[in-house]
Image (cartoon, rainbow, N blue to C red; front, side):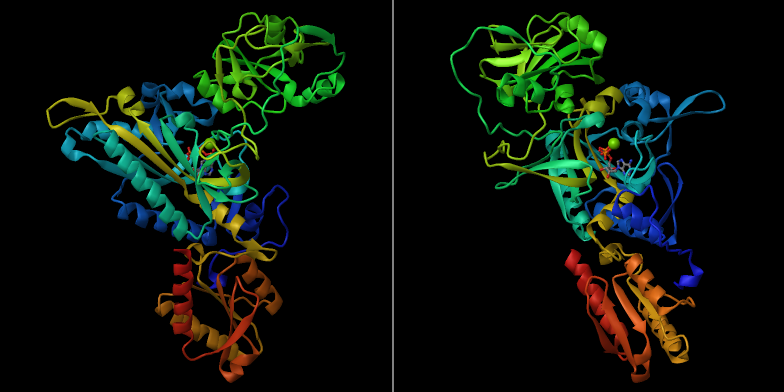
Length: 573
Ligand code: ATP
Ligand code: MG
C-alpha cells in the first residue's frame, strides 16, 4: 500500500479524553476515530489489525474443530424472555422496537439465539458434540464506555458455544477451548495469564478469564507467589494472614463516640487496633435487607455477597432503611438487635474473634466487648471480602500478590442453564430425551488490539508484535532530491509485494524527520530507509523494537526481510 492512497493521518496532539496510552496511540497513529461515546470508526490501518486478529482466532478455532456461523445482531425479545434475561440484563442491553412495536435486543452475547438455533436442528446424540462460533459485532450500553475500543458500546467479539451429550463431554469441550485460547493469545504475541473468574450475568458453574497483564488494566488479579493459583479479585479467596486476638470475653458496653464515623476515626478514638472493629454494613437486595459484619480493615466484595445470597440486584441500604433496621443514623450500625433483617452474614475474617468494637445502634455511640454467639448470632459465616496482597493462597498457603490485567477472553462452563430454560434437548442412544450440556467462550477481538498496544509501545509510539502489525515493513525514501532513492524504494516495494510481504511505502513529499516520526508512531516492525547510501546500493534496515539500524546490501533484501519476518512470527508462537 502507498501511504498517499490510504486514509492514514497521524496526529501530533494527544486527544484530551484519552486516559490510557493505547487509546492515545490508536487515535494518534490513525487506527481509529471516534464517532460518539463508545463508538469508533476503524480507519484502514486499524481495520487491518482487526483482520489479523480475526484470522488468528479463526484459524485456531477451526483447528479445534469449531464451526463458524453467523447470527443476526437483532434478536426478538421473546427469546430473552424465555431465560428471564430480558428483565435481568438491565440497562446494558440495547433495546429497540420495530414498526409493529415489537421488542428486539441488539445482541450483547448470543446464548439465547444459538440455543434456539440448536434446539431447532439438533435431534439426536449423533449430532453432538458441536461447537459453533461467530465473529461479529456486539452491542452493550456500557455504564462507562472508555479507553477507546477497550470498553466500547459496539465492539467485535468472537463468541463460541459448545453443546455436548453429558458433563464429561462438556468438560472436554471446555478444556479444548482453554487450550485453544492459550494458543490464540500466544500467537497474538501477548503476555497473559488465565485466572479463575466469577460467572457473572451469563451464569453457569465455572469460568476462567484470560488477562493481558498491564498496569492500566481494569481487573485486579490475585496470584500466588509460589503455586499456579490465580483468580480475579472478584472471586479470589485470600486466607487471612493476621489472626484475631484471643482473650477472655468482656462485658458489652456502650461508649460515646461523638462525630466518629469511619473505622479509622473510631479505632484511634478508642485506642484499639482497626482489626478489632466489626464493621456492620447493610445492603438491600431483591426487596430484602441484609447485614454484613466484616473486620474493620477489610472491604466487602459485593460479587461474593451477591452470590452468597443469590441476589440479582444489590445496593447499599439507604439512610432511611438503616434508621429502620438499627434505630441510628448512618455510621453507627452494630450487628446486635437489628430489626427486619433477612440474614446477618459474618465474613470469616472475624470467625472466632472476641471483644469486638462495633456501632452501638445509637447516634454517636459505639459498643465495646461485642461477642459472637452472646451478643449476635450470624445466619451464615463465609468469605465475603476483597482479597488483598499478603493474604494467603487458598491452595498452598503462601502469600498472594495483586497485579492488574485486561480481560481479553472468557470461557464458561454453562451446564444446563440455557438448555433447560429453552428446552434444547436431544434423544440419547436409548431414545431418551436429554438436555444439551453447554459451554460458552468469548474473545474481545477489538479489545485485543488495544491490549496489545498497552503491552507493546515506547515513548515514540506503537511497537506492533509482527502477527498483529498492519504491515510488516514500511519503506521510507528520504532523499527527495535523489531520484535513485525513490526508484530503489519503488523497486523493492514491488519485489516485496510480489513475495507476499505486507509493505507500506511512504510516498509522501514529507521531510525525513516527519517520515521517521510517523513510522515510529504507527509501529511497523521493520523499517527500510532509502537515503544517501543508495549510491552504494545499500539500504538502512531497522527493527522497531531495537535501537540500532544496520546498512544492508540491496541485493538479497527481500530474502532478508522474509527471514526476519519468519523469525519474528515464530518468536510470538
Ligand atoms: P468486562 O468485565 O470487561 O465488562 P465481560 O465479563 O462483560 O467483560 P464477556 O461477557 O465475557 O465480558 O465478553 C467476552 C469478551 O468480550 C471479554 O472477555 C472482553 O474481551 C470483550 N468485551 C466485553 N465487553 C467489552 C466492551 N464493552 N468493549 C470491548 N470488548 C468487550
Ligand atoms: Mg461487561
